[in-house]
Image 1: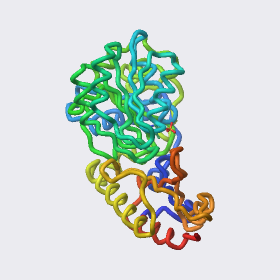
Image 2: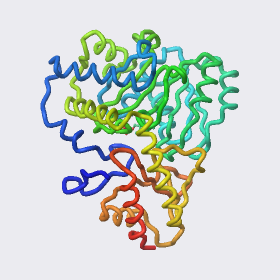
Image 3: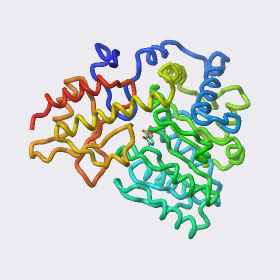
Image 4: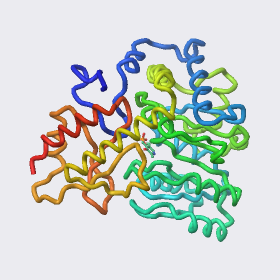
Length: 370
Ligand SMILES: *Cc1c(COP(=O)(O)O)cnc(C)c1O
């Protein structure tokens, strides 16, 4: 059970980030740091090293860079910095975060192709293969790993095979999966992978990071369309100046993130965390079905991160009232994000354990007013 619940935190966040963190992660922020001092920069270096080792076995061929801002800033830094002026990005989308990558490319006035399967359609590998066969201008492919809009888990093994066959650069938005779902960047042929501090690593919000194949990172000098979001310059500075950021960084958040990485290790690593999340999610769905709720997606497309449930058909059901009732019971859930269905979402990542889910199910039973 999350014991850091009362009195400072009157409710547990069942949201996909910011999420509930441990007391020790929050406590790690109670000190000030100087951005150019070795004490701080060595923390940054430790973090970069640890991120690479969580992402891949061949650690020497990969590297990591941290970037200020929320996760989207790191996605935008990546899209805006890795694609050369004459390059073309193919985005695979089945939810709001996939669409957001396409929006970033439009803002940056890049050549863009979009394969969009709506909010509930799984990625179609045959279509991907066909588009890559027909459109030889495409140089880069971007896709979201777990689409937090619905909880959809995209088939990155299959996508990676097709991308590799066509020899393209592969960008993965692993925002809501990295740290919670095991993967190996080399086996999946991922060139750039983006995530952030406040999702499955269970830190607090304030920065994101990109883990990349070193050889690909070396190629992108001068492509950035933005100074502050120049991924290459940020990386080069961290690399050559022992963990230095170019501009003011979220020092307290970075320190808390190191504590979160330590706690991931103490828990037993990504595989063990994945099992906890999976057990949370299965228990949640099983219990919700008993209470008469239906998930939006079939089990086979589901991630263990967040689940979208269809709103009850009862005339007097109103999300806001349901939300307020649950909040009184100590739980905060998430509104829906798909337009085609009335629904709501419950996340199960963060400092959330099986008995928290069981308490939640009891609370939902009591909060059912319709
Ligand atoms: C959280 C998230 C992001 C980034 O969102 P921010 O609000 O900018 O942190 C991007 N992609 C996915 C899949 C996410 O879950």
